[in-house]
Image (cartoon, rainbow, N blue to C red):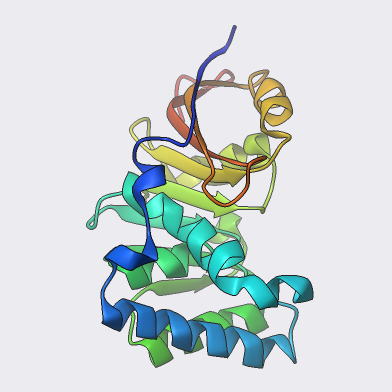
Length: 214
């Protein structure tokens, strides 16, 4: 067995998140974000059109559930941010050091508009993740790539202490099995609070089998 795996129903941390517990200012910022998402969706494909009717649950809450698993000052890298999920939401909630990595120029323009209009500081790296230079305490991602590919893409800017938090669906166990052929890792799955088929995948002690460490 090349990885240890634990599943925690609902997750003591994740299950505690609620927008009822955030400030009015934060709610107003998310409303601005929602309006921008609807406006920009008319010209670029940011999210599935059908999900716009349920933005707060499908996108905001889905992203926000990671907030309970990170610390305010950790250096967070969001891979394949697209419309800003989950990274921009984490920044709006109060994470102070968030970088969103996105190679689509138009989506990067949208992300900068979100930062500007919501008055939320976060960085946007426009380009391929393979060209990103920096370091990460935590790597987050939603619906970008397989676990193996995400770990491979992250190799240049992480270290053995880096933690990975991925929002994953019902194929997570198959992805873990495939990734275990090339990676050693300790994993915990927390039940998603937005999808009974989904989970928050928490990876630590990650090391490549082909190298001494990440």
